[in-house]
Image 1 (tube, chains in turn purple, orange):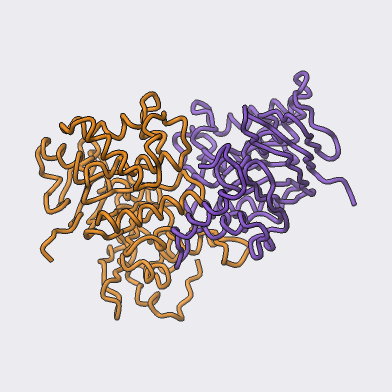
Image 2: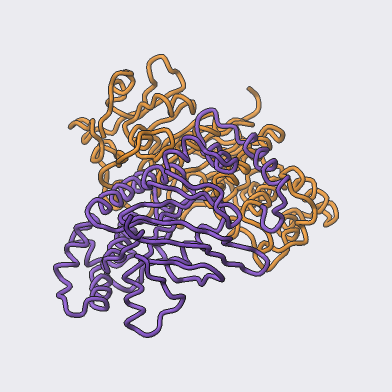
Length: 276
Length: 329
């Protein structure tokens, strides 16, 4: 079999006494989509940030197409090359864009930095088109755009450098349901049109089902269950996965039972460091 | 019944200076004692504005029509000292982000007892009451001495709920109280709110964008769109047999564990711009059932045949009421 797009082995990271990420390994195939789910403090975001390079790992390595991603880039060329490997879209489209820069300039700046010899104009049009934004949005400042439009801009900017992996950290969590559906469909379209692979961090199991092929369930920094998304959601093996699934509101939902189940799950196994 | 409802909103219309149309347009809503009512809508639909209206917290320059009665008293016409009394006691609010609700530099005990002490309660008595309420929300007295930064978000939201109960409110306004929490913690906080509502008989107005959550926790659901209530009724009915195309579309666009995979039915377009006046139905531009009538005449809320408590403001709700009608959005 060919080299996986992204392979992560034995990743660990501690903050003081808390082992935020504890021996996490996974692979993402070319053009694949992997979800990482878990509650607050499960280590999913820290894992994503290590993959991107925003956080350093104490142990373990991240390989992209077989090549180890160094913890720190030396020099400008290496930094740009690293950025072209992995791009990230954050949760809050209100915070991740520069309020003083128009959409068009934001994309041009990114393109000029990475592809100084190419004319950015046609590519800017192509990117805006790809994320479903018109020319009117191109001239606008972020404050004139809606939340969904801003998230489209963030996705366009990430795609501008033609990354191998797109890390989406709760990228649809702050959006309204109807807008969230539009963005999830957009992400599905982009995956069909480009060879990009997704690493999708979310706490929403409905979203995971919608956009990922495989899923990793994390708890207290460790992977408790991994497998094909359909299988994990339909027939979970680990009690924590089952608890996560039961917690999703639906008719006949019994929140009191879930609260009791959580207590039961956390009491016998001694995990006093970060239980809420 | 002799007890007045915890909250009764009648024909509330709210206009902001320079706006082309009212931001709230004829909102009717009642929360009985011990009842949970959900107000569901997307950003800008007016759901938070409505719940803040119950505290008399209105944007500067807002012109109101209609009535907002809390425990029988009209909040809109109340003088400032009555309003202050209302806010310290009978109505309490829980917001989305507990970290933004508490002062990070002061101990949790200070936060909990501040209101009671300001109202003249002896500090020792206030601490006793705070301790009792912390126990009711599943925390112990050691939290009193802690700073907000030392506890998790789920614990902090419990503290906020305990604080909201300090004044023995008849009405609790919860504005997206679990949106910042993960699913398991959300279930715990909801379980707590349900239990407290039962033991304290507090009316609960639950504001959320999550229709599934609303249906799971509340007795009745009101769906808002562009400042109007488009559908209201018993939670199971609204969820299982919606009568408004917007509710139907909202349900269809929610990624769900049980739904078939693949693309979601996204609602095309965006909510109407608040700067433009509306003629006809606010949802017409995005609605697959829209006709010329929809674009010209705003629909009145009408009762569904055979479902006395279920109302929808749609010219075509009869078509949706037929079980066979499948809406292709």
